[in-house]
Image 1: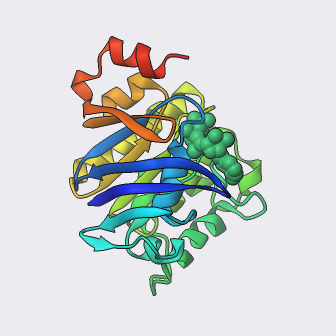
Image 2: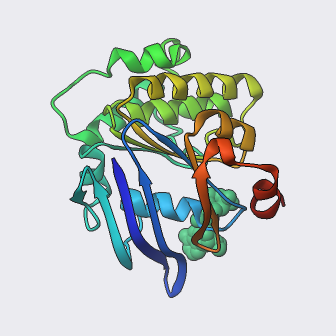
Image 3: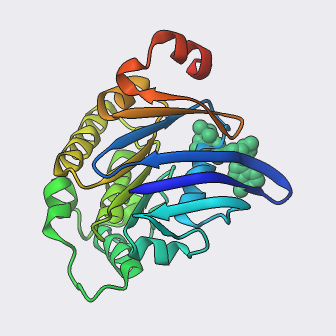
Amino acid sequence: MLRIEGLSAGYGESRVLREVSLDVPRGRTVCLMGRNGVGKTTLLKSVMGLLPAWSGRVLLDGEEVTTWSPDERARRGVGYVPQGREIFASLTVEENLLVGLEAMASRRAAIPDEVFDLFPALRSMRRRRGGDLSGGQQQQLAFARALVGRPKVLLLDEPTEGIQPSIIIQIEEVIERLKARGDLSILLVEQYVEFAARLADDFAIMERGAIVARGATRDLNEDVVRRYLVV
Ligand SMILES: Nc1ncnc2c1ncn2[C@@H]1O[C@H](COP(=O)(O)OP(=O)(O)OP(=O)(O)O)[C@@H](O)[C@H]1O
Ligand SMILES: [Mg+2]
């Protein structure tokens, strides 16, 4: 499981995260919500080790990883699907997936079949350049790349952003299948409330770098949505 304890972080002198604490137990999906610019991506970057913690701790299965590099965290079982996808445009689909494998520094040479079972469209596009894919296909590729190392903790940053409805449905099905395994901790950043409500067990809402509301997703009511989420 993933545990975040009193985490503060920011850019230069400016503090963004204010003592954020959040647990994502094994087998559960937690949705992190909040308006633009409140610090959701910053939190995922800190958890991945792309941004140093100023204070507080990040733990994976009880082990503190706060000062570990992103590669070390990936090898320890953290998968990250960044906002805006960030695939390598000049590399093929297959090469993008191999980059995900290399980050694991594992001896496993091949991309696990289950990745193509989850994203069958990628199998036939193996030789195409990432930059030639549609936005939705790139999102699937970014997702698949995060799965090649069989993560135990998955960080998803707005997987539905700018994606056509048919691909959103596919991504939702993939998350459902991953959840059904029962052993993955998923931290999903999502502004599409209905999508989040369908997938997440619990929610947490951020405002100005702090968590201001949390609970079971079934209790996510209109008052909460209007107060913290509607622009
Ligand atoms: N690289 C950076 N350097 C300096 N400030 C940054 C950087 N990235 C983000 N910020 C600032 O940090 C704050 C939080 O940004 P962040 O990207 O974490 O928000 P977010 O909740 O993910 O927003 P969105 O919903 O638009 O993705 C914002 O004020 C933003 O301007
Ligand atoms: Mg963001």
